[in-house]
Image (cartoon, rainbow, N blue to C red; front, top):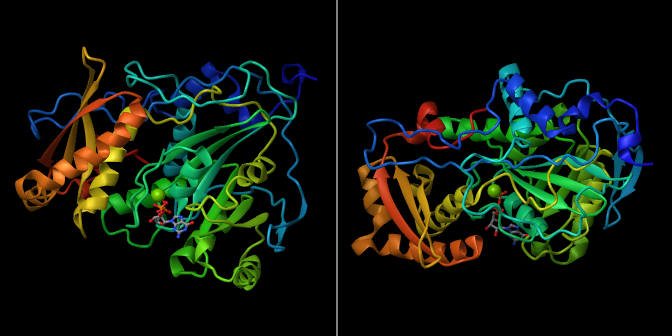
Length: 439
Ligand SMILES: Nc1nc2c(ncn2[C@@H]2O[C@H](COP(=O)(O)OP(=O)(O)O)[C@@H](O)[C@H]2O)c(=O)[nH]1
Ligand SMILES: [Mg+2]
């Protein structure tokens, strides 16, 4: 039976109903369907700033399928993980989906953000939108097709972004050994014939909320839990910290099904040392599945999508099969530059900078010229970022260019400018103008 012919109402998943439905629900929630593609830079702060491009553009949702497929029952029972661990699957009701500590307004904003994932393409799209290589035939949705939002959560530095990139087989999220590198929610759309998974990489949840940026990152991560269908809770093998405990509390509050991913098992030798770890974790919560893996070495990563797909509801895809992410190339370009800065700068400076794409332009010779501004908080930081004789900036520019060539699929010409905007990371208004999603 085709999905279109089914008649039961699916109240909760009405977001997937149609392009118009998704957009109008975003409007109802008080948010623009196409967020911040034109957010204006703050007047008088920097005269040379031209167009602010923050990326964050979603493409039009798929019209395949209707919203009237029946909502599936959640599976009950016990699943046995790869290494023999038992994780009991509970079909807890979602009595309250609001994580503790998140205001009703924040929940509403997060829901609007979820709707925005399905908003139409920006009027000023980046020069190219990323494409997925997909075997999915547009317009044909199998009866048993599954779709769900999967939030990848965990404390900073456990390997969430590495896992996202490994699953997507391309770099969507930037990775660094320094904590709190991920600052935005990044959506990765994983397509297969039988399922579509909308993976959400989140900033790590942590206890230090002193600065506006840190508090915003925490809220961004928590907001991802609000309307997820499934949680992937990532922890490091052989390391359990109070921050892990805090994240687990939020997961318990959410009452969502949760798959525990124990990462960095390449560190665990011999492998038998995993057994007691798995046992301890299964005592802490009734995870629907426990998967030990190494995101970096891509060990046991390949089987994860099937495991996740089996745990999300039946439903048609929400995104076109050739869409990889909701983020534009413009956003990804800024993230690549920030990753290189994080890598080549020491200590505190990476936390005090952010990158904005001012202008991108196709040149006559086919190259793409990118003008990127690196915003720092103090004049002293500007000197450090530029380096002696401009060496740091040159290194960052040349390393970034290699990845930008790959990203844009052509040669790029990169211009980096360093500018000061005082205390941007401790000012909610400035965060907004610099492209941070308000939560
Ligand atoms: N040894 C090892 N390192 C890993 C693994 N996965 C991630 N890492 C490293 O852990 C650090 C943090 O990774 P990242 O993905 O940025 O963590 P996030 O903050 O949770 O997103 C980086 O240096 C990664 O290379 C893994 O499976 N094994
Ligand atoms: Mg990350």
